[in-house]
Amino acid sequence: MRGARALGELGKPDPPRQDVSDNTNARPSCPPGHPLPAAPQSAPVTWRRYVDLLAVLTAKEIKVRYKRTALGYLWSLLNPLVYAITFWFAFKAILNVKIENYFVFLLAGLFPWQWFANTLQVAPAAFLRNGSLVKKVLFPRYLIVGSVVLTEGVHFLLCLPVFAVVAWLSAGYTPHIGWLWGIPILTFVEGLIIYGVAVAVAAFNVFLRDIERLIGLVVTVLFYMTPVIYRMDMVPASLVRWVTINPMSPIIVGWRDLLIGHAVDYAAVARALPAALAVAIVGHLLYTRVRWQLAEHV
Image (tube, rainbow, N blue to C red; front, side, top):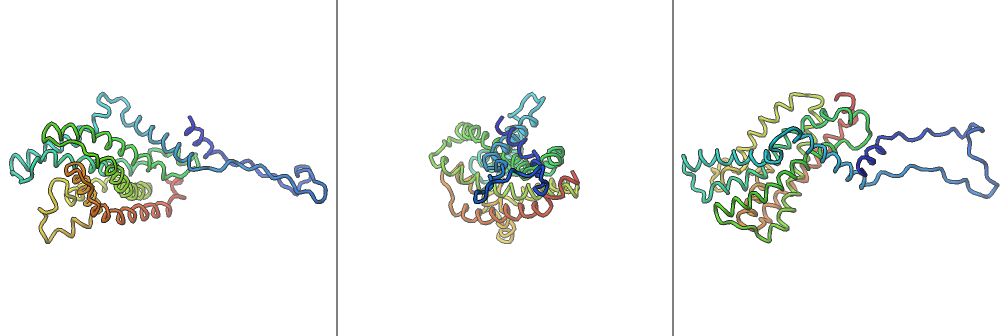
């Protein structure tokens, strides 16, 4: 309810100002030497209202996602699980890839990758799906994209207990105390990257709808340029630079080291954080260049 009130107040126009030159509408005069009473001011829009609004938009995204579905949240698990089974069959059962506990290895990379991939599949249409909100309500439109990132992030975090169970049953891996600080750190860094790409894609897709179709091809190429189904030491020396320039590569390596190796690879995080900040800042700046035109084109 508080978020709904925040949304309503953000879109409410300011009351018309009275012309003080009109004696009939001017404020009453005060005796000489006494200051005029301060004019009433509207309540400032605080960060709490933005947080409430972001929560409302995220809840709406989750409700719309699973409306009239029988499996609901289980769809978030089935996609990476089916991919993991398929890749295990192709690379382990047939090609006999020399990676121990390959199924768990795949899941440790696929779960965080799905957060990135699923967000980019939904983000291009974020402003278009919320066209009436963009046109009629004055508020920071980037919160719409933020709600998409948060929605997929919630799904990813809810997959981690499932990963822990599967890893324990199939390979004997158990959760480690390092997860307590490693998961928030990596979630924050990956969230920066995802937001930066998603907000730029969502903004420019309003003007060029081909981006929505192109993004699927880009995600597919990035998937094979990211060490999700292979280790970094398996990459030929001539191709290492093409894998390392991908900002998602150290993120996936960091998640795998945390979930399987039970340790935060601070070197990988240190490499990923500057790139993540750069992607988030550039993506947001690209959004700000066109944000004033969004309402006219959605």
